[in-house]
Image (cartoon, rainbow, N blue to C red):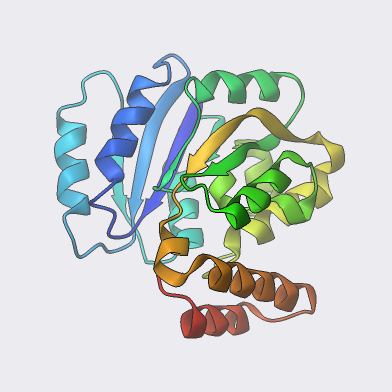
Length: 237
């Protein structure tokens, strides 16, 4: 059984569309619960999710409050989950139809963790180049927008997400998964579609440059706080 974990913060514009999509594009026999972990939203996110779960008879929609920070929120969702497979998903990323069947298929083939290939909701040429790299099974081609499934036993063995990272938490965790599993990390055949909204807000070329700088800084040994400071200085949420 799969527990979907979605960290949110002020996602009133999109969270219900995502929940409706997940319910309509997965099987209740595969997805045991959808856990929405709110990090202190000041908009209508919590009220909307609470209303949605109250009207959802076929699915177990769980709403839980957490301290702010995506790593902290995802760890909290995992802590209360019941499934033996965890599926971490960003609020602005829509996995392919029947995503649950792909996850179960690859897990059954001996892959303890994996992600989908990714495409953006934009035809910008730079983003097309960026998304092209997600087909390759290499550490530097991974990112949180591709989502992540992981068997709970491996998640627990690795200690979950490192909460000292307020950004780069997905990549840091995925790097540890690669180190532990080697070639048993799956890049599944289908595509997840993620929003280009952050690129639209910051400027596509500018944001891609700053993301590259963050990756370089991490490679050169920058601390989690240093990465956070750089992000806050140059990137608009």
